[in-house]
Length: 250
Image 1 (cartoon, rainbow, N blue to C red):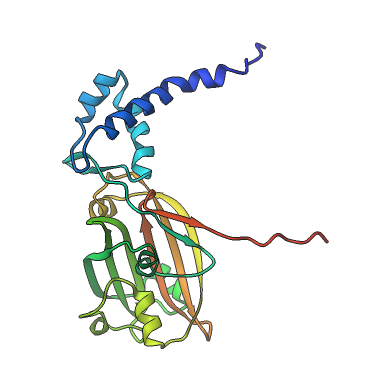
Image 2 (image 1 turned 180 degrees about the horizontal axis):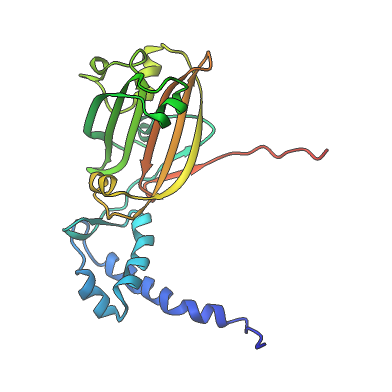
């Protein structure tokens, strides 16, 4: 068997690295808000396939440098401040944004009464068919959507009337300000997912683009699950970290 030479891996990566370098130059020399050349034209000028071009562009999307809009093309955006949070403490996007003086706002808001399906019933530890309130909304930063949040709560915890004037998009902040129920902790599952058509439309990205998804259950002091939520975040606009204690050897 032929032994692999040390530089062979690097050699195989060089064409893709050159492509990213060329793309970085094109993006850097395009003014924020301007559209890049179409994919076919850009792929031809760079001498690569459209599939290879898309793969290279994904890393720039994740950095928040460019944004693809369905049916419109790919646009260069100004570099955003990154919303950063330690996962040890549950805080709203609005609270985190205020810390770095970043203006965020709520976009599309949809409130509806629903009946608990099997998944929701299991997560909230209730019976199927129990009345729920579902709150879906888009969060914008610097005028563009960066997160899509869905909260599902029992209707004795939160009513549509409470989500009227003054609601800025954070169910967590609303419950904390109200002080009832007394919130205790959250259990969260973190995934990387591909954007569905609906989520892609709301976040103005392409279907299949990678998103960070937090699926969480919020507990009150009695151990009751008071909120079941899905939070979709655009990579590049958020940075999450966790401080972990080193375990002792037995």
